[in-house]
Length: 424
Image (cartoon, rainbow, N blue to C red; front, top):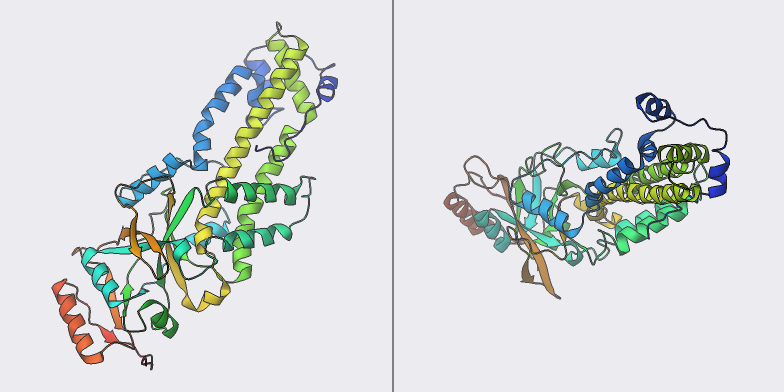
């Protein structure tokens, strides 16, 4: 249950506030007078049927929690190249947002993709790149690292905020819920990622990703790989974060924004004086109701409102955390200067346009998705440079690469790596 310290409303406290309040007559002037006393969703309590209508409509907001059908629908649209603008979420404030700033980091003019000769031929011919399930990458802490850093941020937070709201307790509860039962749980979500690097000719990446340094590194112009600004999408293309202070800053923003929203909700819903006025109005608008019925209806309505607003806040937090799960890496990988294309997929879905595929790995079968690269005007991949690994045959390798590129109508002159390394 999502209670997160739902305010407890004492009927006696509320009743005590209603005795000397003048009744508000139905009509525009009466509502206008009362409106000055309320803000946000609390106003809707004045007219109970309208408020319940608002609650029913909040189902559209709850969809932002990304149930399977919505997650699948968004990603299918993105994979097919038909981006659709999502309705703006009014709870998201983009001003001074370090998460948004990070996800919109300027894309370098050239990013590199280290691969084997077989991989190079496949990418060039198919015009697609493999996005691999993040759990099968070489960093054994993938997918769990973000939660570990999140827990560090929570441990460093004060137990309560300045209003007395239990900050640490509630953050732990919501993070546990999101990662263990919600959209970010391993039972609900798969994250596929295609990796690139800002490092041009790096020995460690030749060794790690190009079959013993005999492969190739593709220099790609990926400026159009990121979804257009303003398009609401779950697809992300951004640099990885390695430094602890950077990772904590990104996660802290998402967590404390959620905490601020919920603390404000906690204060608003716990304003006994305002609740007493609302109860008085209910008894005026519905004279046939007994006092106990009016109290019961108010209690039920506030509980519904609180749950709905909580789900909305949780949805915003989940959307903030979703790209970060795939971008936060251990500092030992920092020299790779990695950029990632992040593709979240519901575990229960069967994507039709870009289905899961499987290839043999060293220790298991590896799930992946073939993601189309953005194409140039001449319908070729955005290849602007090509380096042969230090373990490749320098003379015949270059000649064969030139011939292959001509056959694919790609006007790029391949070159040798400058790394002085030759495999034994």
